Image 1: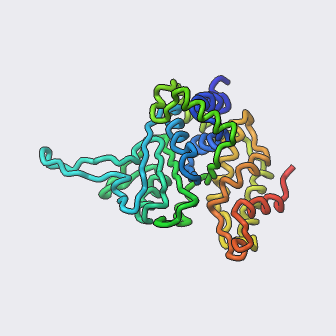
Image 2: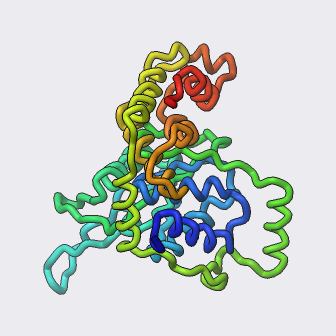
Length: 317
């Protein structure tokens, strides 16, 4: 099938590789989130291509891109918009905020106070905005890519668990390897400019109609009962872990199921393998679990605990 989910993904990846060096798995997870209808929290130091990946994703899906720099004085209306009174017509007109887009980059989301962070909740969950009691639908697709710096904590407001749970994935953005970084330097030496992506010749390979077709295909992916049980067993193991205060919610199980179906389709399969679930589990769980103080003192990270849970829970045959 020419427009299978796998072939569409391969075309997206081919176009993205014109500008993104390395970060293959990271960009793949962004596409999984796009097809799954989820949002992504990106954690990494500045300069690791987070903005470049967001812009590239918007270009390959023929979508609009908006970027909001979160700061302590950012107001909810700066994100969603506001009603402005027009003296000529004696009516209020909607001044749309940057959230009316397809790919929204919420840069350093943990620098804004909780009230502003929560302004994204309705947008992320309901795909709509309420302004002065009037609901405004957001055009599909709508995906939020939020970033936060893991180093600088001064002047930041940690995201509450309710908002963290709205993100399908939390992805750790690492530095590129030496070979990849050398290639980045060569690209810039040869004239590449991340601020002028339109000059690179990235092709739009998917529109809203084709995206919906992909989602319909993903919906039909076969899931054996043993896979359902495996996902639930992982969630229950996290809730009963002696190292955790908070385990995975039912929303975590749903996220893992949807992401696994998407990942299987992107790999050209019409069924989920246990390895799909195991591979995606760290991305789904790392921002949803809370470590006990004793575990943190021991130097454990959320990924360490997730690895232990995956080793303990029996994998279905």
